[in-house]
Length: 304
Ligand SMILES: [Zn+2]
Image: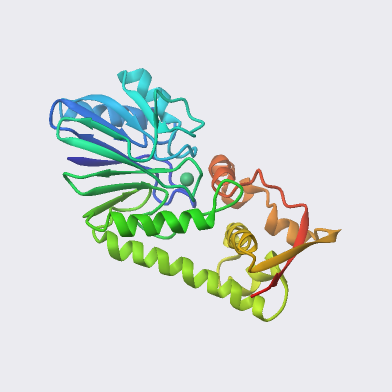
């Protein structure tokens, strides 16, 4: 039995809020996946959900360490005594380090850990066989697409993760993502996600066929019709593709000597708090890799 408990943290990055999940394991025990942000009332709701099914919380499992998914783990652990499980590479304090293939089992629930890097390097996804449920965190969402931003995000790793989920977990009945509503047709959703990435990359390669380009130039042509508020996020996404293409020898780049012009600075290193409001700045900085400051423009040239 899976219950969605949505955290009260709506924002442009988190959609209607972060999805926490409580799984009633049928033996008086429960597992929580992604306890969410450290908001007391949300933790109280998670505790109340366990009480409603007369179950004791035994595991708190993290898909990844981003600030809208993981910080409540410590609070919830203190309230319930449950143990925290996260990827071995997670920077969040945890009692059990998870590796690909590891399982967490209690009652009629067996959660399989699937290493799922790409959105972040510490990302894992969980598969529960009895309900054929995939808990995907920020790898697949109920609506919209996922941000993959350097330095921690890796576009090729992300696409490989999607391909692996499509190949090995095609039998899944439901995707419970980190934001948005549950997805009842996982295969179609994974196909849609893979197609979206393929088309975006073709657009970037297509633009480079017309001559060398900088990231801001690519943003202004490819996202010409999108809300300029989204351009800073778009710039980071395009950078993720270019890093992958350059690593593969399909693109080369050189750094320009001149400092950034103000309009490029605003696009590449925006004051993140003004993009989304100060209360969401921490999330957007993690999601978009704000720790990667871009001091010089690079010009990208297509090789093949
Ligand atoms: Zn995230």
